[in-house]
Length: 254
Length: 333
Image (cartoon, rainbow over all chains, first blue to last red; front, side, top):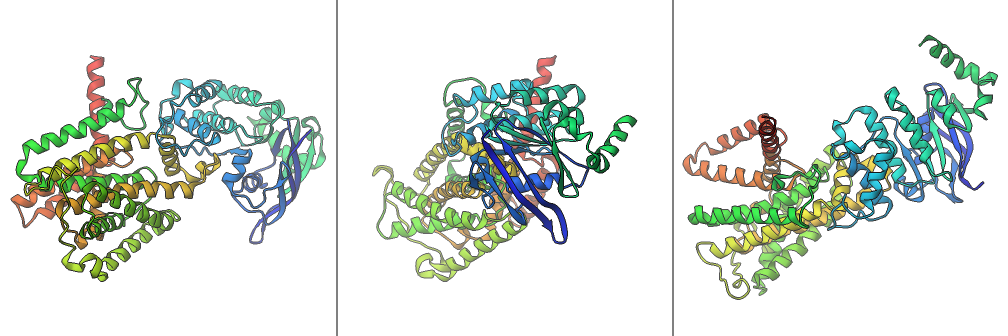
């Protein structure tokens, strides 16, 4: 398997607060990895370090053989490292179609065109239409995003992630806020991802984790405490103590 | 309805360039109506056209990119001085002078963009004011180039295309300005709906999101500032060509603030908004100041308060919403 992203001993602290400590793992082509951990374990901070939103305090990030530790957010995206957001960040006043079209056009490097009609460009139109239909939101194409339900915005967030054709896709809680009956669309979209890209998903919904992931990373107190198959994660003593115990209780209660 | 189509609505199937042609035609018709309705006020209408270009230019950075600026008249004024000086130096052709205005505007846009687009929100606003004040102070000091507080006079451009001389009644001036506005408006309608225009609106909505799709934000904003500078430069050059003088008010803070007021009045992020805001504000101020020279500023203030209270997203947005509501009711019944 081709190594795509190699995270080497990454630490991130804010003053005296060590949010990530010495985190190392790697993602290869075709990987489907879930990153789980209790609230405050530093999962989102880790994603922000991977995307370039936050600089790591120490450690290195190697992407496709290149050191990207100091690259800007947009340069990482252009190389194929994309993410979705836990709380949706979309272009609120643009329509759903324009949101996806913009990602498509940026990937194709045609956003510096001054005088062609944006969403109607041949090639671009077909692509955003297909992405919206994969996520089952074609009927919302011309609605401004601000007027969409939160669950629909989540699906759109996925569509933008797909539109970027990433080599590594980081999904920050793709299931959060999606109504139960629309959750299968998320899985369906995940299934549609090209087989050779690597996906790292942060998720609290263990159903989604077990259906999706071939490998699970557990982050607790800023450290990776476990790496292994989904089957073995429930058996691991340390993980149970740090995380799954409380989760199991919660799910029994609901 | 396509003439009032906001950029957020889907483009209906139609002839290629339909939006641009309808837009250009509407502006031309409005201009012709003005020409025949107010033949004695053509100098005022000409000034209105130049200001409309400034407001459209401001809309490109404020409405489409979300950049807060109160220093936009610096671009307008410097372009006016540049065109005026070029004319005095012997470059009499009005179209060439427009070219001078564009070049000066782009240069000023580049400088303001590099400075102002770097920051966000309040620091950005303060920086834009400081930049505008700096340029205004320079214009006052460099009286050998600007004429200082006396203004730069003696700008006497040659006839347009060598045929249409500038007359006392401002007929040529108005038609010339209107033609420029129609062309600029059509080009801009095309421009704001391009991939680049869409990206700028995306940056305005959420610049981190824009970076997360791989777009570099700062360089794009600078490019937009240059385009905006070209439009403001055209406005400034027109002002110099058609009035024959350039005063300090062209670069001043009040001109910047007035442009922002007109833009918000009509509605930001929509070219029609900038245009309608300029027309309504200027005509209202013109009429009221003639009928009541003592209290007209108070009345203008009152109008602004009323519009902001009842149409906070601008006149154009409210008008379109109202129109749609009435139209849908007709369909339903």
